[in-house]
Image (cartoon, rainbow, N blue to C red; front, side, top):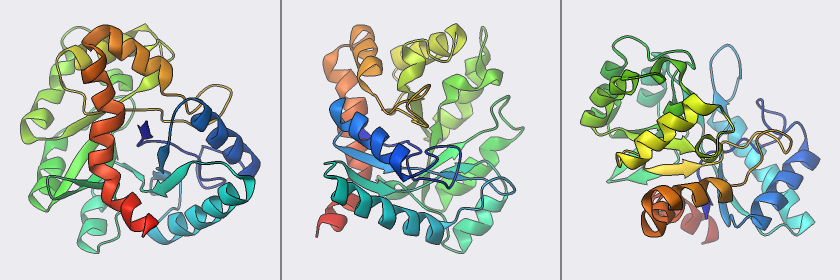
Length: 247
């Protein structure tokens, strides 16, 4: 399986605190069937001072540590970018860390505020799309503004534009509460999910384990459709990145 959303790079956001924790999480991911992982530290002005250069430096250190520890996990990196008008400036200056490509667009993992969808947010996503950037909206099922009867319809403008959705594996198993689980299941059954990812932060509460979410997805939509969300679609996005790393 390929995990496109995780916070294993140590010490640069609210994920792994140190290299030992990162290696423990990596070994756990491998034991649970993950072969490739994209580390996506937060890109959030005023909270986490990450940029493409700092993320690349952290990735190099993590790769070296994985090799020394003998953990057979293939890793690369992008970022989880917080919704902000500054994204336009970063895009114009070619400073956004992307996940890979989808239909010849660079894929950006885009995080909305947890309590709501910002007013007129579709204007920014539309601008991104027009400028060759494919938004992959992170964990919409955990957005409190989308929970409740009918509120998921706020996603319709983004889906109509062509934005993609990434659902958290733990949401499908109830780890983030019944409302998040219900919304994740609805999005899955409606065929609106492109990727299931772990959004792993630590071993205690949010480990890098896609298996329970995959098993629940299989029960809901069948094995072929479910595996596409943890194998085919993620690989379609990141394959060139990992092939370049192997060259």
